[in-house]
Each structure stands twice: as structure tokens, then as C-alpha cells.
Amino acid sequence: MRPCLEIVSRPWIIESNRMTKNASRNIGVLHPGAMGVSVARSLQDSGHNVGWVSASRSAETQERAQGLIAFDSLDEISVWADALISICPPHGAVALAQRVHATAFSGLYIDANALAPSTSLRIGEIMGLGAFVDGGIIGPPALQPGTTRLYLSGHHAAGVAEWFSAGALQAIPMVPAQKKAQNASRVVEQHVAASMLKMSYAAYSKGASALLLSANALAEAGGVTEALHAEWAISAPSLLKQSQRAAQTTSGKAWRFEGEMLEISETYSDVGLPDALHAGAAAVYERMAALKDLPPQELEAVVASLLRG
Amino acid sequence: MRPCLEIVSRPWIIESNRMTKNASRNIGVLHPGAMGVSVARSLQDSGHNVGWVSASRSAETQERAQGLIAFDSLDEISVWADALISICPPHGAVALAQRVHATAFSGLYIDANALAPSTSLRIGEIMGLGAFVDGGIIGPPALQPGTTRLYLSGHHAAGVAEWFSAGALQAIPMVPAQKKAQNASRVVEQHVAASMLKMSYAAYSKGASALLLSANALAEAGGVTEALHAEWAISAPSLLKQSQRAAQTTSGKAWRFEGEMLEISETYSDVGLPDALHAGAAAVYERMAALKDLPPQELEAVVASLLRG
Image (cartoon, rainbow over the protein chains, first blue to last red):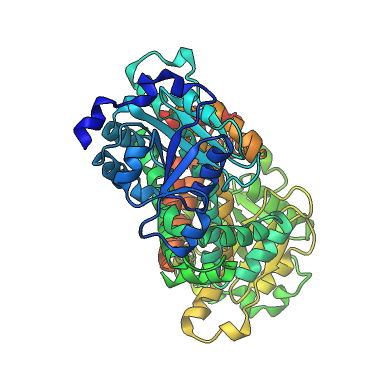
């Protein structure tokens, strides 16, 4: 089937009316976890048809994805979809793009994962840069307006942002600053500005959580937990609560934060800045990976998982 | 002279009345920077004679140390002092202890530097563990009560804490938890509990500043500084101000924070926890070392120093 479909490739370029603001599109979300489903709901709220691949997914995901159009395989959704949005753990993003590339898909591919700009560019090269939009999501799954933003960069960023005309998720195209668009490397950089923003943001937010949990683990290993918490009560009274919150909010996600920290470390390395901070954060989250399928854990349990190694 | 003095060694053990709360002692501070002078003032306020070594020190330090008893050399102050307190950059602490050990000094040696417990133990072994008190200072130079604490551990921690009966600096002896004092490694650990507390505390406080400055540098390298600050304004409104404050408060001290981060990394490694986070923080502060003799720097200048490499 593939050669046939390639004749009518890039429908989002050829059929310009399909790019107008109010047109309804067929959009596949790969693969809907909590975040992906919230993106899918915002697209539905904006009038689009949203599909997913239901084969081999858990009962929990089946439940979560109710109301989305189910396809049996990547091949099937690829024929149907005008666009695919990739929302998956960072370490699986390139492989997913390669699998999509092996299908008949000829639409716009939006990678919305937490990736180093260089990794996102690799995906862009796999899919074809002209058919690729770079994205980065900041915030929790978008269940209500105002919590979560999808930043978009690349040639079609503004057009894709218009797809999110309603719904909880706010889509923000990143407009290149003219003064900076002076050389080829800047042009490439602007293609993946959304990923760069996501990396810079998560560098602190998720890096600081790793650092804080790690400091608690060090104190426990050295027998000074009580003394540390007493000193914090005097000089940094928010840190114990922040530690407890970091434990609860990261314990179940640490298994995929490891990959995100490695992407951030790669980003630092790519621009010639010291990259060890986030290699270290990756090592911290790696030790928490076993907490994946458990409910949110208390600080003591997270510290214990760090000390187990 | 040394053999003679060794006959009357350990005066703080032999002459028990000198260990009573209100006795006036001869205490040397090595070497008084802003923090050291504030410790010296608290000892003076508590009725002690406080000395320092004035040779080869800057006019600024001479000015700062006015009112302290000046000695020409380590040899001279070592004969005079009942106790010496070491307050110096972390990377110089072991060498200073070795230099003191080479004098006729026979009193109590208090290392109050930001050191890995294992480094502090090395100093304890140089000076003799029975004549050694481990310390860790948390807070800025103690100019007024309530801002700064000197934690103390080791056999004579409680006695030394009593020397600080008045003055701005609060001294806190760390009392071993009985239930934990079960084996030899715990006993050693409790000897350097103050250093362990200092490492755990600074792991987050100084680590987070390095992380935040580093995130700003990454955004600038990638051309997304404005976008990052705009996102922070929505979802983490304190971070821009925190970044600006971190730049101003760390720029002049980064040259010695590098060593402190390496001590923290060593502490993690010693207890079998991932140590790369603080090796990374050391690399960040290393890039800021050239800001040492300048006034507090703005965020933009610190980011520029990080990007210069």
C-alpha cells in the first residue's frame, strides 16, 4: 500500500483548507498515558477525531482511552491519521519514530516528548524535517485550563497550535526572534526550541527533586536525619514539606525521569556546558525505578529505595 | 621547644578547671575571613582571648581582625593557644592541619570546615582523635544572634559548645543517639556527625544554586532565556528571583564552593550513594571561579561566565 499513499503524501501541505483553523482533522496519539489522554481530550474538545492504538495495552489504559477511536496497529492508524503526536517515555521516542517511519504514514509528526534538541532533531530527520514539529509539555496532565502548556517549534508550529482551539491544554508556538535567525545553526536550533525550553525547565524542576531526595538519603545514611530536619526547621522551613512532596510526586515516575535526566545531560554536553549534574540526577532516579507500579510513596520509603541501591 | 611542651600536653584534659563553663581560654582562629572573624567575636563576647596569625595577610583582613591578638607565625600561636579553630576553604583544611601538627601545638583542634566526614576523620587522625572536635557551620557570618549555628561532634563537643556562652554564634553539640551507638563504625560516624550534617545541608542548598544557575545557562546557550522566564512566571514564579539571588550570593564564593561540592560528592561515594550530582555542581562552580575578587554579580554576568567555560 505504501507507494500509493506516498502519491498523496503531506496532505497538510497540499490540501491547504485542511490547515485552516476550524477544519476537523484525524489525529493519532501515540501512546496515551495520563498525559497523552489529556492531550487527546483537548483535541476532541477542539473538534478533531482522535485515535490511538489499543492492541496490547492494559485494562487501565483501555479505560482511560474510552471515547478515542481505537486502531489495532500502527499500520492502521498511520493510514487514517493526518497527524501523529508522540507522547511516550523519553527513552522510547526514537524507536517509536522509526516504527512510524516504517508504516505508510505521510502526515505531520509531532514529537512532544522530553528530549534533548539533538535527539528531537534525529527524529525530525527520520520523519523529514518539513513534516516534523518539535514539542515540549510543561505541567501535569491537562485536566483543567491553566495548568499545562504544549510548546511547539518548527515550520508548522503555529498551524499545529491552532488545532488546540478549545480544551484544557494551551498550545504555544515559539516564534523565532528575527535578530537571532542569522546562521544555519540558529535555524536548526529554532526548529527544536520547544525541546530546548523543556530541557531547561526540567533541568531545575526535576533536577531539584532528585537533589532534595538525595540530600535526605545522605543524611539518613550518615545518621543525621533528625538533625537535618531540625536545622531545616530553623533556616529553610519549606524543605521538609518539599522533600515529602518530591517523594510522593516522583516515586511512580522515576523510571522514566531517568531517561529525561540523560536527555538533559546530553543537552548540556551538546552546548559545551558541564553535564554531570543531570547524569547524577539520572542515577538517583534509576535507584527509584522499582517504585514504578506502587502508589505515591512517602519520603522514608523513597529514601529507603535510594539506600538499597 | 616541642618535646618540652609535649610534657604538659592536652591541658584541656589535665586541667579540668580550664574546661569549666566560665574559664577564659586562649583560642586561635585559623584563618579569619568574614566567617572566622564572626566566630572570633563570639568567643571574645564569651570572655575568651582570641588570637590569629597576621603574617602575609591582606590589609582587608588586618582591618577585619582588629582587636584580635596578632601572632607572627603558626609556631607562636601554637605555643600560646589552648585550642585552635580551623576555618578555611575546604581544599586547604588537611594541609592546614598538617602544618599545625608540625608545630608544638598540644591543645584541642576544632575543624569547622565544610568537609566530607572521611576528610574530617583524616584531620582527626593527624591531630589525634582525642584532641579533635569536628565542626560544621550553617548560616552566614554570625553578625547577629539567630542566623548561624556551629554544630560540634566528638568527645569534647559539649565542652567546646559551652565556650560560646555569649555572642551571636550558637554552638550546638550533637549528642549521639544511644540506640545507634551499637558498633564501631557508628562510633566513628558520630565523631564526625557535624560534618555529615553540614554535607547533607549544603548538598541541597549549594547544589540547588548550582542547578538553577546551570539551567539559566542552558536556556541562554539554546536561545530560550525569554521563554524560560515567561514559563517560570506562570508555573514557578519564585525561580527568576531565586536565580538572581543565587548569582549574587555565590559569584564571589564559587572558587571555594568547588571544593565543598567535591567534599559532598566524596561523602555520597563513601556511603555508597550516587555521587555525580555534586561532581557536576563542582564543575559549575569551577567555571565561576574567576568571579572571586569581583563584587556580587548579576545573573547575566554569571551565565556569561558559565558559557565562557
